[in-house]
Length: 376
Image (cartoon, rainbow, N blue to C red; front, top):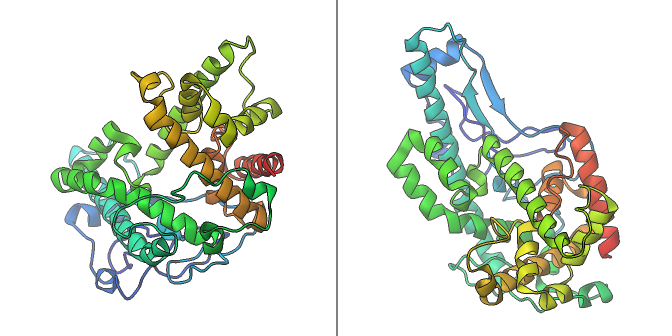
């Protein structure tokens, strides 16, 4: 992805990580931006006086297949293209409290411009990702310009695991391209409201985005602080839903990462169970899998049938497809970022909450392997 840069450094430079090898994103289409200088008096002053703080991905502990660019993406790739992730954001380092007020103001201007360029980069990636997904959407029978996320049907049930030779259009597409279609559709749905906020608020957008959170922010435009905050909120939401789920049985809430919790999540991810579950349990499952903000939503019982149960079934249908693709390729073929996303989508985003870096990745990979073993 693209770190923000100053002076002669090109704007579109790929993310450098130990397990990735990239080429620039769509060099022909974006060539005019490569030579555009990004400099103001405040920014130049800050860049000359102090080092930059670059927020980027952590080092992976497992050698994995190359994360492709849009140009390289093929059926054999299990990882989605790097353009579906946020860029590196390059911001000035904090100033000491004793720094003069003019310097602090200059730094604030530089930070605002850095965020503004970061958001513009993310929106450009949303556009190019969706353009690249159009022929793939046609292969899946999805409307080209209506951002419907695959898989569209909920008829894909236990038959896929019961018949390993069974194939579907999603499986034929390959996981990397399937994830491109899915993530680009998700981001396009958020592109219009986020673009309006960016146009109206400009460099003050970072102050407005936290009010709405991920509801209007494409994944390519989410800063690390926003991602961490959403993961923490998701963990709290999950615990509350688990407490409500186990209240009637008299059991205690299973410990995070335990075999008991894994068994609970696997049971909730069964399509047959979701079809027969009560409205209350449907909302609890949706909260655990991150599909709703809270399990006790107002009018949740009334809307469970027409809204939340279909939403849950579509998500479980997606997990069935994604599980099959990961099983075929192996967990080791996933990048660290893909492992984290896969774990979060399966309701265990807090399994490595107290860990960082390589230790967190190791725990997430181990958990995902257990999940796939139980599901297969």
